[in-house]
Image 1 (cartoon, rainbow over the protein chains, first blue to last red):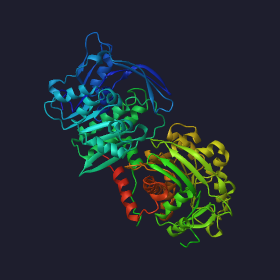
Image 2: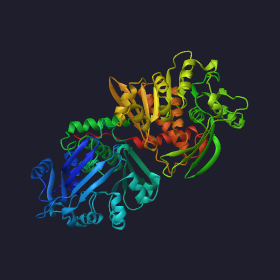
Image 3: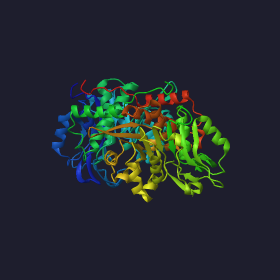
Image 4: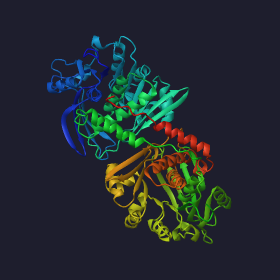
Length: 318
Length: 318
């Protein structure tokens, strides 16, 4: 696999974040959905191609590290005189909610994703959380229908752009959203009813992320809703959950790209691998938890998931 | 196993409940922790002996059904002229909280559990949610230390009787509480830190119930915290979650009593069996969901848990 042909094309922000959690605060550290997705796939030895935009204030050393880790940056625009997208947020004491303190779109305001010519035959596409019209424009630029397209989004786009969102959701294979977003999108309280409704909107698979409560993978086969559940690893401390969902998405599609299969068994593994990688992100501020994870550390953590979910069925009547 | 020697001695309320949920309401239906625990163990073919108190207003037909199902009632006092314990509650629209509308202690106010002589050698004891001094008095009456004692409790007793509660917790093998209660009891936000702290208070095992988000089983082996997680089955509709925690507890200890083992593997199965039985309780009002579950229906549901949690680990480096 050459640099010119990444395994996974990723659209998503590359940005600065200021974050406050009960464990401390960090000012203007590197963040963004595209960044986390790229670092996560890189831990699987999978090359990604980022389609994004940064300002001239974005540090070259960081770009060098990203390239070194296996991220192609030819799709990252850098308009002259521009400033990078900036987000600032503060997490509640119980970490189950957060307040946005500031959002400065900067270069993101005029962002039009352009996929480098050499990337347009990539088989795997990760549409990170961004304006659904931009997500659609990425799909439009692909030479042929990719093998698997995963789309991540959030309630913000359901509030202000539901029609463009529904239009792009209809074109993807996997949708990843959280439980409240699944309820909002479907109008159903029951997750299994929500899943059935959303799978009727087009995607073959639905991942419902529940944060510290794990993640569901839903799928319809022979008219029946099938589902797999992967818990979140209980951590000593959740220091900063920023980027955990993006890290999950990167590990999920990275595993699938690496295995070259899109069957239910492989997607189940993808949910576990994504959850394992996301657990590293939560343990440190920003990308500090994920960027240096070794293969051995990741395999140990996946084994912790195996132990946590392993049981021997025993017939009641036996 | 004769009627005189139940597999599991259960202390817990046998009572009336009035319940309102988004799916409807029921007035003065049969409820109580002891009732749900008894119905749950009965679905495993395990006989229980209930230690409780009822009023003269409790219907004989219900007592007959309970006996028929395998519950020994010689430990259920019925003071002359007494009225049964009564609780009334209303669930919030999202089912994640409820308000207590009325609590009438009635015969429960002067309840002193007395274990029938023939039951005092039972190997399994389930201390349902009740005043911790009463839970302790049940243990005091056993002729010898049972093989396994499970204690269920709630935040109410942590608020008003923390010292008697801690004293009885120190004497049991398994504590079952919900996640917020684990945080309150330990003073720790992280569930793994909370588990470590609580396992230092005496119990060998800790079950943390998270309702629709599943249940953890924690255990310390060789100084390391081990854990197992079982998700809750996603249901089409959660009609009435009243008694789900008690049903879980009954299935958990019932499975253990039936297998005659208290090792980690058997307790993991117990968590799944308890979760499967609890899912039936949630599907109908009161005990309607649990009381007629057949062995075949239960096995089908346990198989749904197997499918939901089954995945094939795949090495990252392979």
